Figure 1 (cartoon, rainbow, N blue to C red):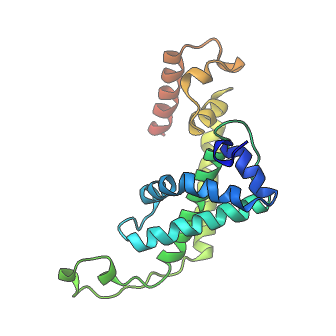
Figure 2 (cartoon, rainbow, N blue to C red; figure 1 turned 135 degrees about the vertical axis):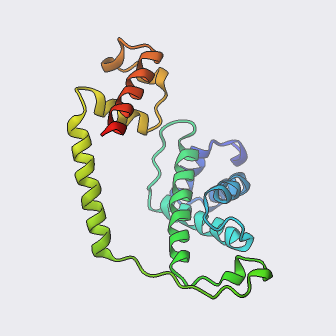
Figure 3 (cartoon, helix red, strand yellow; figure 1 turned 180 degrees about the horizontal axis):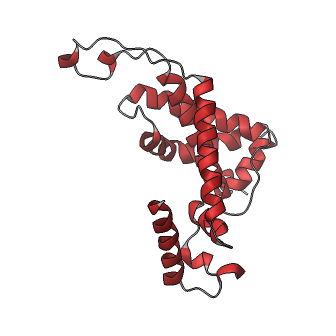
Length: 195
C-alpha cells in the first residue's frame, strides 16, 4: 500500500517500528495544522520565530514519544488526538520554560514603550506551591463530600467533555433526558456557588 494512503495510526506504528519515512509523511500532513494549533495555545503567539521553534520542538517531542512506543492506536482519529495532546504539553512546557527567562519588553512591545524597564520573573516558591495545592485539595475534598450518589461521576464526565447525549447512555443516568442531565448539572453548580 502506498505510504501516502496509509492511516495516521498505521504510519505512527511504522515510525515506532523504525520507519523514518513514515514520520516524514506524518510531519508533512500535520505541520500546518500543528502550527495553527500552537498559535492558538501559546502565550507568545505574536512571536513568529518562537512559534516556528515551538513547532520544531513539538515534532521532536512527538518523534521521541513514538520511538519510546508511547502511542497506542485506539482506532481512527486516535493519532490526531494523541498528537495534539503531545503538542499541547510541549507548548505548555516551552512557554513556562521561556517565561522564567528574563523578559525583554522591547521584544514584545513596540518602540514607543522603550522606556519600560526590562523585568525578570521570579522563580516560583516550592513551599508556597505546596501550601496552595494543600488548600485546593482540602476544598476539593470538602466539595466532593457534599455531592450525592452519582454526582461526582456525572461532574467527572462533564469535566472530561463527554456530551450530554452520551451521558444519558450510561446505565447510571439512563432514566434522564438530556434536559434532565443539564438541569441536574445546573443544580449542582448552583448549590456549590452558594457555598
